[in-house]
Image 1 (tube, rainbow, N blue to C red):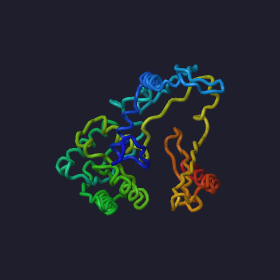
Image 2 (cartoon, helix red, strand yellow):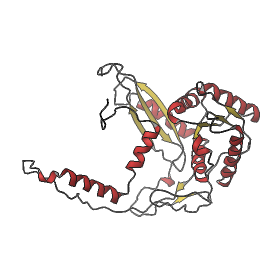
Image 3 (tube, rainbow, N blue to C red):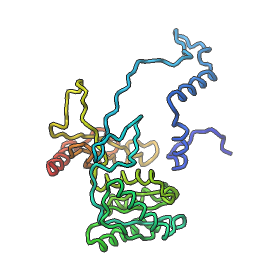
Image 4 (cartoon, rainbow, N blue to C red):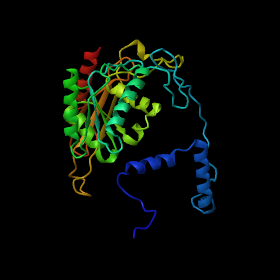
Length: 321
């Protein structure tokens, strides 16, 4: 038997991750209260630590300040009213949209989502998108049945059907799935690395409800993947901010290195190659960006081809400006 409460190494499943997030999502005051209760139970302040050290039963207090949130504006120029890091896009339109002419839908969850119900959902998806400012030149995309054992084949067929119907290359493929853990990574591998066509996954149990807020959240992603721009922030009017990016061309750059595990547990000398990635913006609002990727010797923390990667991003910036 496995004793309860042991630490489990490895990646959590989707439902497990969601449960952890729900458990951890606490208001600051509630979290502070929970920490105090744990401190009382452990009674660490009663144990002598030596060296003149002691543990206070009270939490450390530090001074802080609340920054005014930036004005997040949409197409009309209205402030969407960001409060505590969230805002509602109801009755507002995306700042910049790209017409959607060639797209397709693949149903990997036919048991939960019948073909007839899926056609109704696509109609709702188009209507809600129109209210957000999206332009659907093709309101009846081809809908096909996907095979979970061969997601690449399903996406390839869907892209071909979209191109045949619209006579233009497929812009995006919407995928209805049951479980992120079982098929999501394979869909992304096929769409991003093999076909070079963006994809948007939606869970069947959420899509079937056709909740307007859920659809709007998905369309935020779709519009960005098509090359649009959902919102932007107004320039700061704070006199303490002495740099004004909107007055001159600029590029925001981010870079990181990810390391793969050792091929043999404990053998750090023989690792899988590390992946070095760099992204750079190329638009005035700083929301559109391009990415470059390089592999390098496993465990190498310094980006080996930093100059070459940066040059690619600069070239891309020049093409768009």
